Amino acid sequence: MPVIPRVMEMENALIRMQEDIRRALQKPAEERHWVMVIDLSKCVGCESCTISCKAENKTPPEVSYNIVLEEEIGTYPNVRRAFVPRPCMQCEEPPCVPVCPVGATYKRPDGIVAVDYDVCIGCRYCIAACPYGARHADFGETYTGETPNPQPYEEAAVFEYGEERHRTEGASPIGNARKCHFCLHRLDKGLLPSCINDCIGRARYFGDLNDPDSLVSELLGERQAFRLKEELGTRPSVYYIS
Image 1: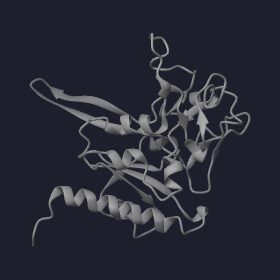
Image 2 (image 1 turned 180 degrees about the horizontal axis):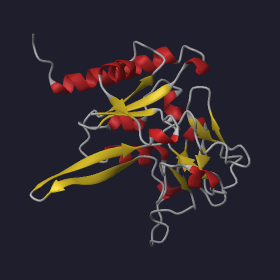
Image 3 (image 1 turned 45 degrees about the horizontal axis):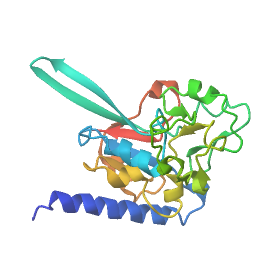
């Protein structure tokens, strides 16, 4: 049997995931369960997911929806590094939801935990409640604001949650809590989240866990998986395989 070139295998995975998404969008939202599967054996710690996410969602300094945790394992000279990407876990039992005093943080029917910027008062209770450190406060900082030439892209429109917002002083999402939302503005149009699309090692997979024919269902059916801090009962929608 001929061996499929690695680059073709990666492209085929992207195409299949896009087909999975479009098929899932034909169902009512409450019948979908979006999940992410991350293959730790393929992650090389390049942080392309972090950069892709910042470019897509135009997050300011100190706000990163996707980070890559690093750990050094072993004793010199037998040392290696392990990488664990960490987006929002989109918990089925999210601790951040019940602590919000105004209901700005809520869980959608498809399982994604979202933030209503127009309701959020910036109290940051949700940030304290998240056991994964996946939430951040937007204090209106910019990368070039303290330089002689502040750049226009710092105030470019943000399209999170399908709404156009400009990061100008006093306007949301400045002052709000922010987090990964599986790129809902892309997902609702049948597109993959940016971190899935741009992962150079094809370590990330995305789809509807309620669809037995989806790639994520296939991966979780064939490979042993775990979720971070499962003992807390949060039931994350991000799975890790290796």
